[in-house]
Length: 171
Figure 1 (cartoon, helix red, strand yellow):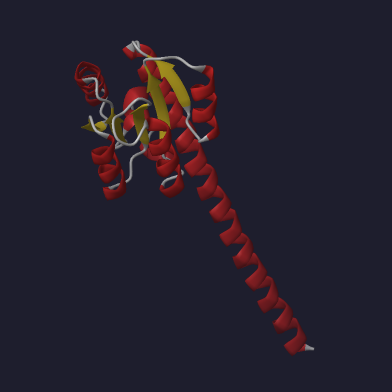
Figure 2: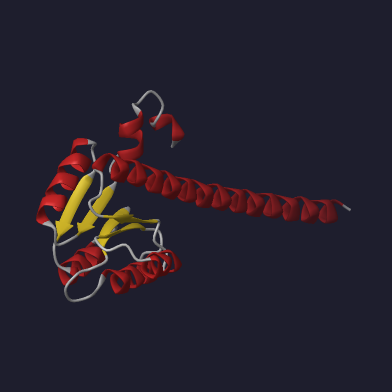
């Protein structure tokens, strides 16, 4: 709940137990990004091949995936489509070395949170990750509040029915 977050620093609050998967064949980018994210408390798994990334995706929930568009095997857009089909809550940030408006538009249509061009400035990437995870947390909170409200409405309805039946019995 909210009380667990109060008094903690912002970076800890945003990143507490969040799991990130980074799928990119650029080993230097992967290592730099992994080091940065782990330094901020994120759990980071990496893969430089799309098939391995897909396997990892199916083995556990990831809050966020950083995904290269140009991968051998399954390309990033196809992988994005697969990710969203079985884990719609996972936020995905697409990375590309070759900016192309059509590819960016397709990424957004398939559900990407953002699309960044290489070389990616790590501080920018970190800010985008934080915003994506904040959006996700708000979505989870919204669902939780809706479920709570629905449950309370069910309780009120059943209490009302119980009272009405009691009134009828007392007549």
